[in-house]
Length: 425
Image 1 (spheres, rainbow, N blue to C red):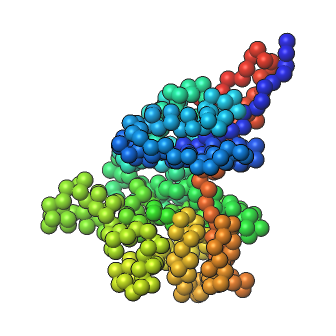
Image 2: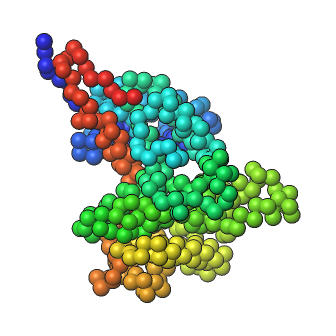
Image 3: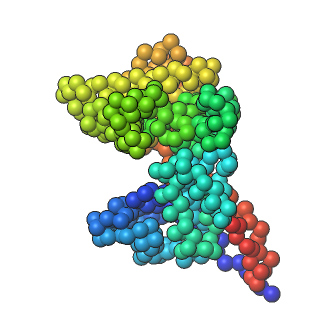
């Protein structure tokens, strides 16, 4: 009986399914190398668009396909077709698993999880606390499972990193029976990013993560802060939903809850209207009409007062969270900026740390002005607290967590070619 084994699967496809888009990356986990990246956007519209970039040697450059993509099934079929053109099709024996970003995992999912029908049902049960995100994530999962029912598929949750928060940080001070009955508590989001940059910051500082107290700042169109003690999240700014916390691109962040009641009484605004106001027409956009920090800083430099107000509000709230988490941690070893604004907006980083010298924090203007895709320190050498910029890589983190769970090295080897191992899930 032959004992020869075929090639060990080592590729992971990462899918991030939104309501009208699918972002994807195919990675080779033998060396954490990207093989292809892409995006399908405007799903369901006549102007759907797929942009696919193969990254293998000799594969050519970016390709664009336009035309109506009716739903997520058609979107993933189009992705599979583009990957196949590069010899990277979903039927490849080298594909080990598909990793899915899932925004809300509630309290139930404290680690990456192989998806089965029971897991799907639980993700669906959480839709009321993530109505903008979990339904789209579910569409992507169901479509991928239909296309490759034999392949392990893994859910990696935005909330997992924050499940370590102590009860006094996770609970809201409202009647316990009501809160527990309706799962009202603080869950936090962007956890994949916070966990990744915390580890990378420890590498940058050349110190064990277990010894470090970090404040991680994920500043994109959505924004959140986390207090991380020894690699463990002890507090974060987002809550039941991704609306709480910092001022964001289109989201308000923290407001008095009574604003909702006030707008109902004096403006007759129904729940859906207020929801749209706070999530889609607030934040930077609501104050100055722009949610792109590059445009806001350009306008501010030209003397635009609305842009200046939006910038100052954004920085003021960011600074308050840095101070609050310094108090929570007691000692801060580093403040870490990441994501689109955090990695690229030097003016935001400078303004956010300015005035915090009493906390041991400072930014070196010359170091801060350097543009680089590498992790780097932007604080002066004499600073008691390091200030760092660490580019996030959520797709790599999802791929690594997926592969660690169901990659070939985690499964029992087959006894022979005639008795293959059964993939989990």
